[in-house]
Image 1 (cartoon, one colour):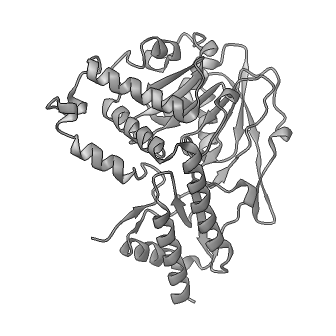
Image 2 (image 1 turned 90 degrees about the vertical axis):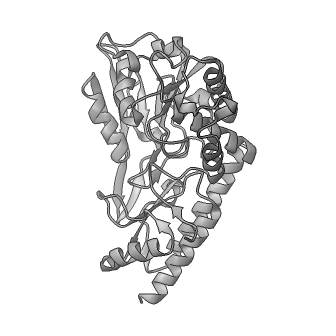
Image 3 (image 1 turned 120 degrees about the horizontal axis):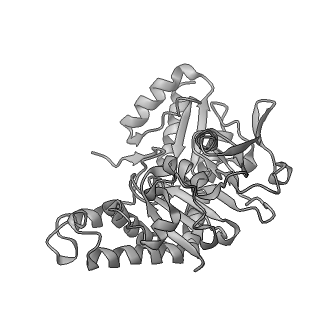
Length: 361
């Protein structure tokens, strides 16, 4: 079979080098005669692996020592609950920036645990999607925290500038953008990210939290969502998602070998530019998001003749281009081009797009 490029929004493709290494070690990890998924998370071999994975992530993101890195269960949706349970005390409110489907979902869940102020920052002007600049968000200076999602996978919106919240703790759902470009972690109080896009397989979620915020959880907070408890136990209060943790560690090593986040940032910019140029230079395809707010990770596009949608998806799969059908909420097509997607995959996609356009005029 010819090479397949998987454009799924998540679970997404993993680097081939990582998958090959995991395959080679699957039943005999580090000479133990066992798979890493069979070994105790309390054993010295696993603890050493876990410590290296955390150390590599700290190196990649320049995470300061006064932040804890947690390897958690529950995916991003688990953190929709965990964030307010840990950071929203009685009598306080939190600002939630609504920029798309996932930030809205986070706010809906947070409303179960406290007073949530929803701030809608997206509008339509002459058929184009615009995002309100952060200085015009009208944030509450007394909020317990501000939550936002820098990259909306469904809507194809990305906010590249980190908002200034004037010392109100800033919380970011970076599930679909973590490690894709350099950020200053010190500008955030808490970052969380489901692993299944840029880190590893589903089942693992990374939380990076400033230590002074630990220990303020609500009394009803479940133990496996209690940041202070997880930090005290090195993310091993109960059995963590061990195999996902191991694979995440391999991805961190792969990324460091590539040259780190600065290197992948350049590649991601190149991939996105190639795809958006193909869309913009055509009257057959379109993307309606203002150029400053276009996601580099998730590129939605629409065929102007939507009767061709099914044929596009079928023929794309026949050419080894998988999972291009857009999210059910927005339709069209969507190409998710996370870190593991090589430039060759995007080149093959744009080649197919041009060929399909030529054959359906």
